Length: 216
Image (cartoon, rainbow, N blue to C red; front, side):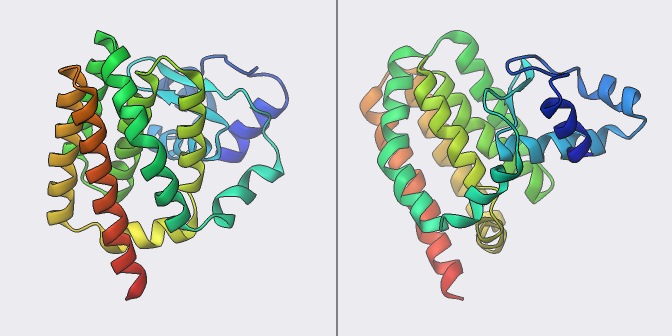
């Protein structure tokens, strides 16, 4: 199904920046279950072929879709990604605290709620990524959003998936929830320093548990 949607994008039927029909409409058009559409869109989002904006819909990415897209994720080690995230995302969180608008804050809260309610690893990972992207969107800086989209592609790698699945226990999910909440609360309070600190502490926790998982 992802291939069928990818072909539509590549053919120009869905030009860059255009909004995709809702999941229900796509499912009816393509005669498949909504669950199938949801999985396909998640795969395309990881590739960068589409971007998913919580509360606004799914849009065709600005970059072309081609066979080279799948090369990037598996060429970057998870720890390289985490080092980059530690250097950049605290800055993004601080900037979000200064520039976030009310719709941005509502999207963050929505992501938190869906993350809490996620019953599968896949859904948790999807909403976790959506939260981090919503924080980047709150900076009102497209470059930060592009960086988060690149991070999202790397999170689609087989090695990231393996380590994250191995390390994501219920206790760690609870920890990540508290850390996410601290970051979002600081952003909403316009406390740039605390938002940066909270994001850094969260990412350090993720990196540390993934290092432990890699050593097993």
